[in-house]
Image 1 (cartoon, rainbow, N blue to C red):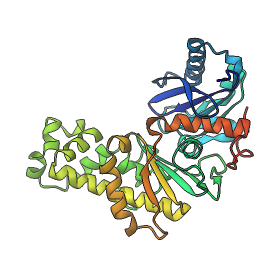
Image 2 (cartoon, rainbow, N blue to C red):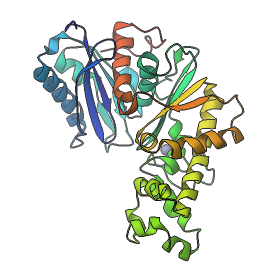
Image 3 (tube, rainbow, N blue to C red):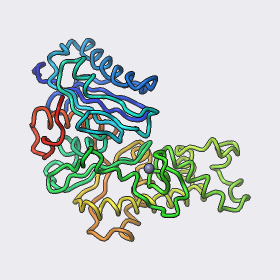
Length: 339
Ligand SMILES: [Zn+2]
């Protein structure tokens, strides 16, 4: 491999930051991850700079030989300025990303919403090569989407065109989202909010039914300790009430997917994110079963991304390749000025 053709991809999530050094074919030659340092807004870019330098040193690459850095980050963001604005997973008004990275490493960098980046990664390295109309949906700590329509990655004025986790699926707004608004898809079905949905729903069930459930016993009778992991584990062991709740979450997910299908008319939807990857059948089967009840458009294939946990990293590398080197023909060059 030619060492002067190396790119860096950074996947900045709400909990973890992952960094990979990659060649232009998406072969990772070095990779690392850490919990996000949220001690200050500046600490976040400092951590990404430190991890990039660490990987280069460990593997004998010169930082100056890097061709560019792509960052796929949890939003919302202002793409043109390379800044996160009030990110839902971090307690800061503004988190500068591209300017400090480019200034410190002396390489061009560009920023994209993580799910939009993943859609681009899927096209370059995953399941949607050759497709002009598809969407990627992540069900993880939050819920996000990236959509390519007629070969164009949809971005929007600030790069937040696909914040589908915050579409309203419950007009009564019974649950409040991490963004502070009510009734959003993510408030019911994301990994961090499924416990709120369970607690709300269990109030409707007879006390005796709840107390006799495996789910109740798994948390020692303390529903404040509930996690999404407990729900899927109990459902897998045929706990009746947990299986019903998983199905109900599937119906809500089907409503979300129907909105994606009605808005973007994709020929394929790939799905990723920790909640999906750890519970493939329990997440996808109810969506496939119920989505036709809500979607107007022809239903596309819906399948798990082949890129697994690394889909965000592939997305970050893909955005660097696309907006800095222009190797891919997906139309987004004008919208993301690299720094
Ligand atoms: Zn929201």
